[in-house]
Image (cartoon, rainbow over all chains, first blue to last red; front, side):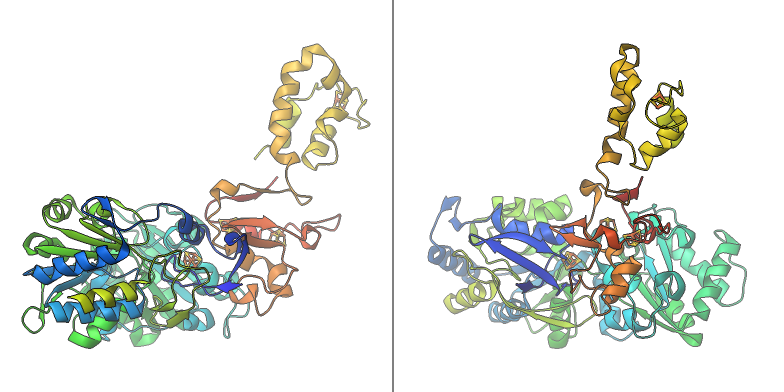
Length: 408
Length: 153
Ligand code: SF4
Ligand code: SF4
Ligand code: SF4
Ligand code: SF4
């Protein structure tokens, strides 16, 4: 049967799955990363627990509701691996509780995505890229690892309406990174290696070349040649990744100036390489509701700021609900220490370091396989999906959240 | 990848012609082209003094003998299943304008390269431009692989 993959924010829709004795036997078109997501159906699954002991699902849900009800400043964190339906139920719960809500974008692609959602950076869909782009630019991103089918499905290799002749004649690619990544190894002539943290000054030298000046840094001739090629392109797409997000934190105005400059003579769009399958969905939904993409407290109207980020809020909150995320292994140690001091509720299909420390564990169905719903692809396109296997006793995230909200 | 010279170094280098070829160098070329097997060299197989060479040659030839008729070797453990090779292969594209040409998985069963269970697989090898006597030295698939998971011998 046909299925979609929730292994990354490309949400590939052409996956063929065969079953044998109720289990997945073979898959077609799924990349290795996506296969890992599918195989995780059968490994490290979570089961309901309360205070370190096995419990029934109903007990776990009512204990979670009890903890949240008593909390003075509850924190609801995660969300990028949940469906839009679950995210919406989570927002309702946050408002009802007057809670702080934040997601993983808070420490990765948030800044960039916010600029895209606010219209500060022009954007387009990946289908536009496939049909029209003759210039693609990976900056601090390595799709071969993070989004394995990005280049074959959309950016470089496929034929499109205006790009019928294939990548070697129709498209040019550049890669900027601090190391010769697997992606860069395919695009050797278009690869620029930067020193760590060198993104801003490299961008400045591109801006200089764009303005007809001699760049002060880097390999001058190569930068000038690149910028001239970029100016001549009909349709360019820039894919910034985590490398750029970390290196340019707080200085994204330079990127904006570069994109604006390129758009004076050509057409350039930016699509941030968000990782988890529905991070953009959460950011978009919160933005529509509050004008902010993350770090919001509903305690007193809508408050936004660094105090409401997971990093700070984990210190000031007295209960945390963590859904579809493993902050204890993914975030700096300070967050782990703070979370270890307060009661935590984990909703997740899998066991994790975070769930090891949790007071309450509520297992959930794996979205895309056991649970249907919808999600927003990295480029803003909405994708809907149906479950392809039985949930094996776990409820979809949305049901769990609704039941918690009812019991609060 | 193994070169003709490296293989030649592991033959007896006596040009005895028992393999049916005029020289050991010709035998090395034939080994690389998969037209001969190590066992086709009687002295190497039978004479004790070539034991070390024999073992080394058999070991060196193992991946080549496991390659497809076009000489394609797949290192599954390195493959990301990214599909670059599938979409870049000109034969796949010509045979499937609504599928692989547009970046999707194959929509018919003519594809040479497909991704199954997260790794690349070679089917319909006779369709490959490198197949048979009139072969063209196409390398669109290996050139677009980010992890060197596929190569030609
Ligand atoms: S590229 Fe992403 S969505 Fe597509 S199959 Fe791989 S992991 Fe799944
Ligand atoms: S049989 Fe062996 S030793 Fe004799 S010519 Fe052929 S390869 Fe060389
Ligand atoms: S050599 Fe060419 S025709 Fe053969 S599989 Fe590779 S890309 Fe396709
Ligand atoms: S062989 Fe290379 S190009 Fe083909 S799917 Fe595997 S990693 Fe990608």
